[in-house]
Amino acid sequence: MLANSMVVLRAILLVVVQVILFDRLTLFDISRPFPYVLALILLPIRMPKWQGLIIAFVLGYVVDIFNYSYGIHAAACVTMFFIRDFYLHTILGVTEESNGLEPHLGTIGPSTFLLYLTGMVFVHHLIVVSLDIMSWQRIIMILIATFVNTLFTTILLIIIEIIFYYQRGKTR
Amino acid sequence: MRNLFVLLLRYHALILFIGLEVISLSLVFSKNSFQRSAILNATQEVVGYAQNTFFEVDKFLSLGKVNDSLANEIAQLKAQLQGFEETPDSAVKIQYTIPAYYEFIPAKVIGNSSHQRNNYITLDAGAYDGVEKNMAVVSSKGVVGILKGVSGSFSSGISVLHSDFAVGARIKDLNENGTLVWDGENPEYAILTDIPGHVNVQANQEVEVNAFSFIFPEGTPIGRVVDYELDAGKAFYKIRVKLHDNFRNLNYVYVVKNLKIDEKNQLESKIKD
Image (cartoon, rainbow over all chains, first blue to last red; front, side, top):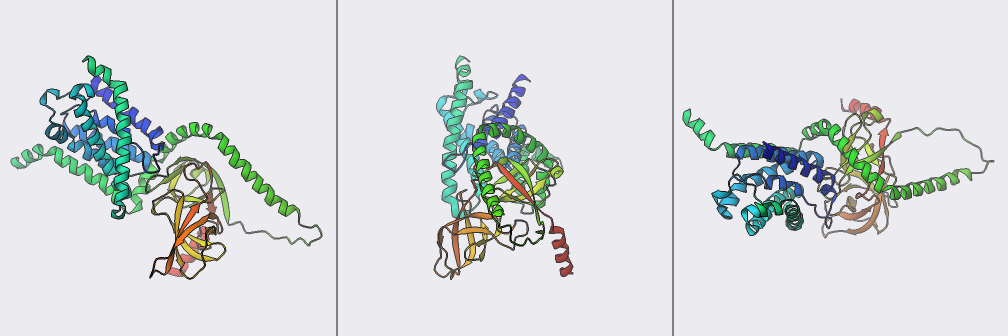
């Protein structure tokens, strides 16, 4: 119960920070970071998929409302969460031991965590940027914006992870 | 029947995924703006309240800039006033009243973006202040946008930086009419199209709203011609216009209320019958 309320509290906090601060941070006029996806990335491994999908949809939709973007973030979050288990277990080879734990630096290992983080953020940002620009003629711009944005968000998330979770992971 | 339930149970995650994805993508692709304005109206009060709270901080931090722009505006108004005072007393004064077509409602911009493909603005003036849907928003420098959703004390709409935005515009010196749109590349520049290739377009010519637009007052400034190109075989220029407004920090704007719009709409609907 305590763990669940922590998940909800973290999601609310991240959305508030996203709306107040990160929606106003523009990088090179192209894009901006979306660190609120951390709330989805840190959901416990192998949690019931339907729960996760609904959390992803609601989270994305709340961010959509504040951005007037109607469903773009919801679509990206739902897709990202849907492929998460496949990515974690089949591609990165995270074993059954970590089921029920939150994926952190300390729980699934630094290199796996970095690959996991970057992959998830990339999928999310690719969908958000493509749906936002939505034009084949500007495919180059979509790719540039996605890469810059992914880099920006990933660096921010690594900083957040190290500040808030790294020590705890070590002592566990 | 039992097999169906087993199937549904096994693939419930996939089915839920497809369902949620269809909902969100239908929201993205729905071209009919009813859905969008319904959402705008429903969530306006909450989002407006939240953005107003964040805006208080922004407002404090940008007080200096606001002071400068207000001082500039006062200086301009003073210069205009001088023109009136200098008219000789001996001249015969003709009493006439300019028909008031437009009323200006001051508002603060509390929500605004400039780096998405479709950008929206939120103002702190709403229905209680006399703001209605489809009213124009201008600043002291030029056009800002058109309102699409209005609640009690907030309103929001599309800014110039939106794919649905278009306004009839003309080049001031040439009196040639065209259409101003935004191509999504750079928030400082818009594109003026439909100017025929035979006219003598030059850089630094002023672009303003033309007489065909009824929601924007005629002559509202927009920007200045930066460069133009005429592709071989094309009949119209593609002109890049530097917008006077800086959409990265809009502060104070005016909502334009057209007092004669009902009359015009009635007349037009009469003709259609």
